[in-house]
Image 1 (cartoon, rainbow, N blue to C red):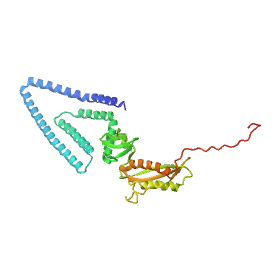
Image 2: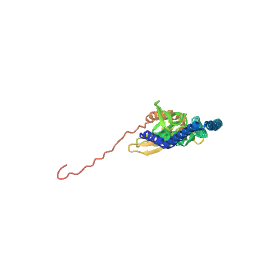
Image 3: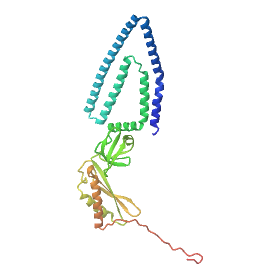
Image 4: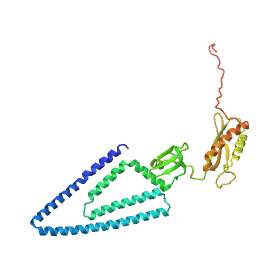
Amino acid sequence: MTRLPAIAISLLQAAAPAAEPAKTAYADSAKAKVTEALTLLHDQPGKFFSELLQDSLNFGVKLLLAILLYIIGAWIIKKVKRALEKSFSRKEADKTLATFITSLVTITLTILLIVIVIGTLGINTSSFAALLAAGGMAIGMALSGTVQNFAGGVMILLFKPFKIGDYIKAQNYEGYVVDLNIVSTKIRTYANSIIILPNGTLFNGTIDNFTDKPYHRVSWSVDVPYGTDVDKARSVISDVLKAEERIIRDGKVQGVPDPSIYVGSLKDSSVSITVWAWVKVEDYWPVQFKINEEIYKALPEKGIEFPFPQLDVHVSNIPAQDGKA
């Protein structure tokens, strides 16, 4: 990546010699015409002024035609720009994307119009076009990373995997989206840090959007010692969940299941009880922390302690050999 600017400069330098033959030929042609005109002025003044008048009239016609083409072209570009703006407004497209596409189309059409106007004046535009193409390639290579982020921003604005205000997890960061532009996305973490993610890698990676749906499942894993009455532990945890009004239950929301409690796994030193419940997205963290605290208080009150890591060591008597214990 660090060599790209050097490559771009090399391409620009290579583009200049490519235009040199046309430039030299044009200079030689102009020099020859000046010499011919001076000779004609000296030998046949009348014919010189007659041809000068004719050339002036021809150039005047070309100039008027070029001005007319520019006026018509500028009017058409203006109409196209307004049509695009109305179309994006009608479809309620993202403002950033709409502005970018409108500007891109306008600039492209303006460059094309300038080339046409220059050609109408009789100026050779082949060298200009070659230099423009080489310069565009050089700039594209030098800004390849930016172009990738730019393309990622366009895709994000088109497909909308998230929007401003959503809570997302991506690139090992998570937080609320506070800004979204054409090349990068800003998220604010719970520590109030601002993380800037390039759109290229962001769109090509995994995005977990917590707020895409109105309800989210909260999970808890509660470990109890072996020998604990699982039904009693389940009853205590169920009472804790029932006391929390923010948890969805009793089929109040269609498609959202009631809380569930079951034995999740058997560990080395404990039995793991898995608890699932559904809440509104904005209640996710408050309910998560609240239930953690309530379970920690409720289980010991009912005689259910939390386990500690333990290891059973079995010692066997080894018979003595050769009279040695």
